Length: 630
Image (tube, one colour):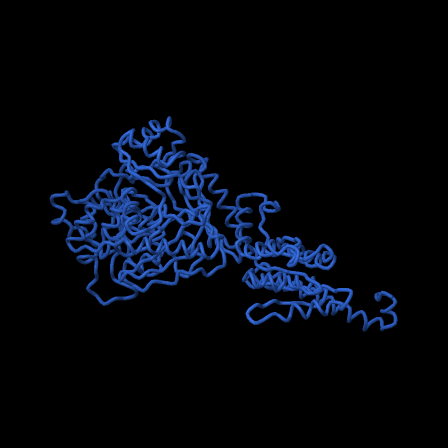
């Protein structure tokens, strides 16, 4: 590929010389030396252009005057060329959408996959204005851009998505909180502080520990600090740059989980929401994302409603990430919003019908929004964070990647950043599978953790019975599940003697990750039906043989459930079949388990054929002497 570095026109002559951007035909060339690597910060290095030698410049406003071939002729301009920009370009390439990026690093992650790379600062108003002339629509992959210039460009007719007003609101965390509070979005209590006395007063009002935050340039744990008591306030303020840096405080939130919802908003204001996920942080940096989140359905609905309401209060199209706190009393509080694709949505590339990156392009281009639902039952995303500096850090990352390449359902994304530092996001690995159990087990294998510790493995199947006298029968189900390596729990739950325990057990079954319940009962046999009436988790009833009616009473009781309360059942005392039925139910969404179940059936078939062969060879009399018990 031939590339060329072209110096930008001076600010005074930028407009006049913009027509000089086309390459001279047949004379591709490369600069003889690489310029010093600028940071992605607010500095303003000289503007230059990296592009394919065969590329023709975009017509005015980034729109082609030719008939549309493919999805669109519109050139998408992206401020920022980090890993989010890279994955946005990859999605665009699949759709045949041309993407130009503006980023100060010549070798930024997106530079290898974009259609056009303008090397320059997205915080320099003149550079952003010049860049915008080449684009049909302008968007961001980082919110710390020159929003004032975006606002000016909008007034000049440039299409910016999301709108500059949204970027401005989100750039300032205090302004963001104030905005959402006006729309009734649930938030932790917060207040602006600008003097030592005001922050001391906030400490008295909110108590300690006290979360102190910078209004701007705060992300991945940066710009936040905790004061554990009044004596720490001065040092915490100093660590954040002082009151002149712009600070506010929040009441400390005792959350049980951190959740996230990706919301896509189209140009006409309609929205679609991705499944709620749980984010797990390491040193205030997102480390693991589990999809979907293991929370009750009512929490998922509440989180989705909060997220959607927040995004509807903003202006512009695109994908937004809404980070949330789930508190101990089941409140869902908004933490913050990102006006772009987000770390918590990386998994959507492999796990959803429409990735967050394709969705962002659809939204800003005015195309129909895609299906955000998951096409795989479970996914887990693991961030590859720098564990060392220099080559030592790259070696550790490579070792992790090597292990990932040997794991079923794992996809590696390497951002190709030129430098590695501790805690820097260098890539990510997404693992998809048939169940949360299977993807977590594969993550344990990837991280070389002990996946067989009973304290860490959540059961998928429950075996319950009304009395320990049922154990000689019900243990056969346990033997089957153990054979298929399916984690299970076995306990006593009596419908008559411990009704409160039965209610709690059944109501919490789905939340605890149970996928099937095997319930053994004799006599009146109310346990299977009562449990089935309290949970949507499938219930298999095992009729236990009794001394009076030999189990027929148990069988009839289980099968005579009213309409709307289904309970599967098996033969009297046949807990083994209940175990096998649960295996088949789980195998429908688990390819590995399906193979084991199929192999088990094949073994049964082979065993029968082998017996038939021997019977035919030996005759019934000799066969009876050798193989039949008397």
